Amino acid sequence: MTPAPVETPVRVRFAPSPTGYLHVGGLRTALYNYLFARRYGGRFVLRIEDTDRTRFVEDAEADILECLSWAGLLPDEGPDRGGPCSPYRQSERQAMYLDRALALVASGHAYYAFDTPEALEALRGDDAATRYDASTRGGLRNSLALPETEWKALLHSGEPWVIRLRVDPSKTVTFEDLIRGTVTFSGDTIDDQVLVKSDGMPTYHLANVVDDHEMGITHVIRGEEWLPSTPKHMLLYDAFGWRPPRMAHLPLIMSPSGGKLSKRSADRLGIPVMVKDYRKVGYEPEALVNYLAFLGWNPGDDRELFDTDSLVQAFSLDRVGSSGVQFDMDKLAWFNQQHLKAMPASELGRRARPWLDASGLESEPSYVVAVADLMRERLLHAKDLAGEWRFFFEDPAEYEREGIEKRWKEDSAELVSAYADAIEACDPFDAESLEARLRELAESRGVGAGRLIHPVRLAVSGRIVGPGLFEMLALLGRQRCVARLRTAARSIPAPG
RNA sequence: GCCGCGUUCGUCUAGGGGUCCAGGACACCGCCCUCUCACGGCGGCAACACGGGUUCGAAUCCCGUACGCGGUACCA
Image (tube, rainbow, N blue to C red):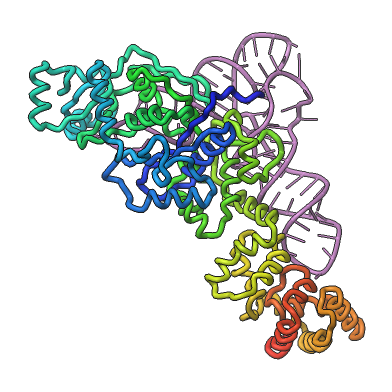
């Protein structure tokens, strides 16, 4: 399939509302916009949609910026870095929206309405289907139903008013969605959307259309929850005489228990919802990005591991699916593991460093890198080096109970301390020699190597699982090994 | 209720009239490798929502039903 022709230059935007911290679904939307922009050599714009003053959250914008930056999705234009379409916060563009709305009133595409939310609520009563549209507006208090002298008096009296879009019920609105194909809405199902609220702020619908036009946005890529309001936006473009951008509505990310992935449902399932929480619990940004890219999109072949640049090369909107997708933590963990494995040891070491620091585990960078190299194949998260594998950095505080039960025999203490003696003088102190010493010892005592290997592992790491024993010993070094072996021989009680 | 969108293994998906008794990945289960655990390799389990059309032939096209999801605010 050939990609749909795309007009250049592409300009897309990610337009979150600072009503909370960045949501993982929001990050995916940002990612698809970013990939699309990069793929076609376009610009990726960040616009803050802060028109709802009642839900404004102080540090939300900073969080959005921080999370995008963490994920490597830096906008080309936005409130923090400016750009040709400044300002990028809708609250700072307020005057423009009112002007535009007034123009719509003048051209007959919009009108003043004086009905309060309470009055409308009362009108709706038990019938939730009551709407504010062509069928009811004639009986309500607005500049279409009232005589001119009357509504003008109201307007100047200080009475609260809003501006509403005048929707023609006989019109059918049709648009091409890049992901869903032709979508059609009948005008009589669209109500007279409020454009300017009584506090003078525009609603999302107005601000979004005005800004997308003013900012030269060519493609609107957003979540499917916006699909039902798109006809209102198309009507607005039409009323303004503007050419609408191309539309692409992304499938929603669903909770494994059904429904939109909400804070509450996700928390219950152990799925972080805020992007910053992924960072906090130790996911690598490239893994999250890779996983999110695949939540609704695929490259059309069997490749799965991508860095952002290769995603850019492979991305296209016509390979985005249209059905909702469930979030799967197992798969995310797998991506994390794969990315960790693919990383140079030095990088893995760098990723582990903050976790080691936080756990008070101090170590030479070169040693951390060597540990990372040895452990990379069995890490799900970089932070595990400071968790279940912390014995690389400090003596084991305890020995796995199961290990003692299964591996520690009557002769273990004696064998382990004999091995301590054997390796104390072992030179060179490398995996090969350490293995040779162990096998010699086993043979001279007439026991299988396993009789020695398992207790030694337990003594040195406190655990019964881990990387190859001899590589592990070599890395830990003579001092630590000998000391830990002797401590264990002394302190682990013989069975029985 | 009304409007819209959707529906292929448990999950993410490939597939867009014959090459599909449906392919890949995660998860799960077995076997192999092996000092353990991983990694890796091999194998297994497991899906075209249902009903009507159209057609020589349908997972693929059309209609309907069911189900899911979204929307239905002076929230975005």
